[in-house]
Length: 113
Ligand code: SF4
Image (tube, rainbow, N blue to C red; front, top):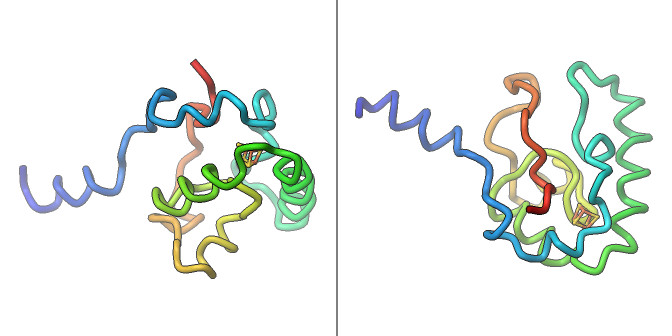
């Protein structure tokens, strides 16, 4: 593997399998993916409203603590455990790629098997 292939492999990991996150079975956001991840070209004012609505779901979620820890540890994108990407970055857990460099996700990371 060349150095450039290695760095790409480190940056683009496949999503974790559900059994790696057993707490997702109790997630309050099941079926609400569009609240937690931005649509392509989402407007800033739309994001503010979407993330406010997501935070209300997280506020009543019984697994917010492990969810937040997972997102911080894995430098996730989107809204996890009551935190936006900006909030995680401010806490020292910035996402791997800047928002402008990303392509839309094709999988639902909150999906339960
Ligand atoms: S705390 Fe995590 S699992 Fe719970 S609703 Fe929020 S994003 Fe979903």
